[in-house]
Length: 469
Image (cartoon, rainbow, N blue to C red):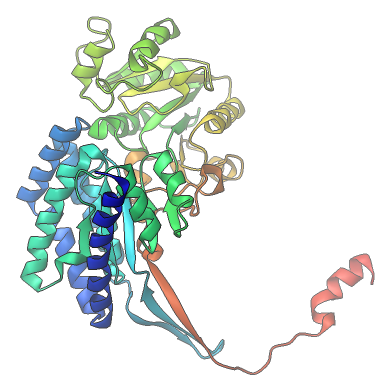
């Protein structure tokens, strides 16, 4: 199929989405938008469908594991529905007599969402719920390996829409098998482009001429300092690092451990199934994990036994190993372990003291992952705040399992999301978790009010007192 045919195929889908969205908005109400969001949520959360989606995702992408994907599909969607449950996205949002401004919620139109193979059900469902909650239509562009899962998810959503009499054309995907040309056309013709995954796609979205939200690359670095509860820290890190076989962009990729508690912490890690490999093993790990300069498709996001076999570690690590930590000191392009690994492999750095740990973390993020998030396990209440003013990051996760906390958790205040904005440090237009507010715009009614013009003295008195006129 040539480029013209790709353009026509996407334009046909777009035309249906625009017609559906116009009718959805014209006949809109908060109840209708809420009901559509509930329909999408139940489409993925209903247990038998959740299981089918998780099994298909692992079978077709080869990434992650079924049990954790079921958990992710459920909890991420449940948390999102909690977040948006009482949110007003239709009609008058505010009316302030003091400013004379009335704010009215308005949809953006048709959302073009590029979604990754790492979360081929949870991420699109999250985007779809946010889109329809705010009165939009949405067209998905899944990765090639995620096409089948996306098709099944849409089948489930359309079945739920049929129950409530909602228009199926509100939620579509570009015609299979997709591809770069079709994705590009979607990016160029949508009213908002939302991209999770490939940084190449993020850059293409920002240069498409369409308003765009892209999210940055993860390479989470976590500090364990001398005041931390070491057993608790090791338990949380192990749970996070192994969840869904480290497919999350919020999975720990580097641990920076202060020297004073280094050996004690390694003992705690070993008790949690973390096998510690000395730096002498690093070349062999690197050679197998990056056989041609790129991450091995045979190793990333695989179960522990597969990873151990493929890395040549059979007999070198305990049989109950859940993940491996490779001691290293190198940082930068010539040291692959300092970057994102998408596997049950974490780089382990030994810091002289806490200040050195901060500096190591800064260097790692300067290489990769700036803006995304870092973690700290500490008993010092002042260090997290100070760290947030020192490191180029949008999130400092304190004493939590990182991949569960970054994208929202029932025991922290972050919005539930699978897409993390990384601010200017990560080349992104947003610095918070992608959530419903990004799928909504406002019309403001501005009325005249009594003038509030200050005198020059009110503005400059303090300045004149210090610097003179």
